[in-house]
Image 1 (cartoon, helix red, strand yellow):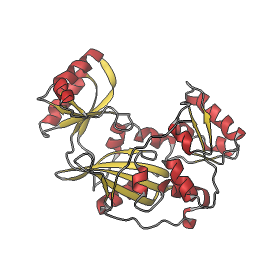
Image 2 (spheres, rainbow, N blue to C red; image 1 turned 45 degrees about the vertical axis):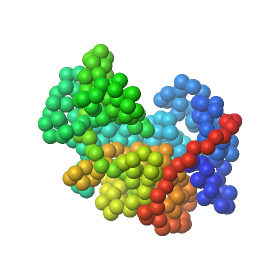
Image 3 (cartoon, rainbow, N blue to C red; image 1 turned 90 degrees about the vertical axis):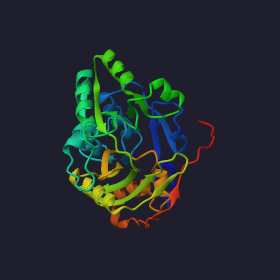
Length: 326
């Protein structure tokens, strides 16, 4: 979606889009001018070295990293030496903070959207203690990994129905408390999870473009509580003020996505994703072509980029369609 949107916004054909992936059938290849298959298994410095060589050989002017983005954020000078500018969302230290949801929430001072109450656990004993403490104040709790993407690992904890009942009833993202405890106990020590107050209201996904701590534009999407009813562009002032503060406080740059959810006492932040969101194309239907604005603004300066007004209140959705892979 991002590549298609950049091409759509690039009416003067100024940019050639190159995409690389370890998956030889990556769907993003369909939207690129050229695509390349990355070698599998490269991590850390080995992957950085491959990127440096690739950018040099292909004369890459702007590199938007996905894999190893935190490490690459501290190596802008090495890429600049071969003529490549790197568009990173934040510094290496900040990216590592953002990607650890527990540390990130502990670092927040966001008056208009404070995070849900939570505890960190990586043993069953810690989970039980966290659950007991939080359950005194909240009727429903949930868990999610401290490091994850696309909502993987998130579940609301159900004290009544077994996981089998939840499965057969088609209840997504829920798990039975005792089934969860049994599984955690069998693992012994596990990757850090957050045991959290569940925020029951509407969820907001906010797609943003920033420039060195300054928010350029943001499009909030309110998700329906009933599946199949799409999302609504909702320019809530508290959300717009909060994402501007996040950009300023964490010196965010380029693309980021912020997730919020409503509670009885008001709005609460869930997390920041230091990347374009999977739903960014829906946000762009409201007016601003965010992927193009981010690339062209980084390249040419944002004062040269026209940003159209946002059509507040429109409802949007995504439609699946069949296609042949390359």
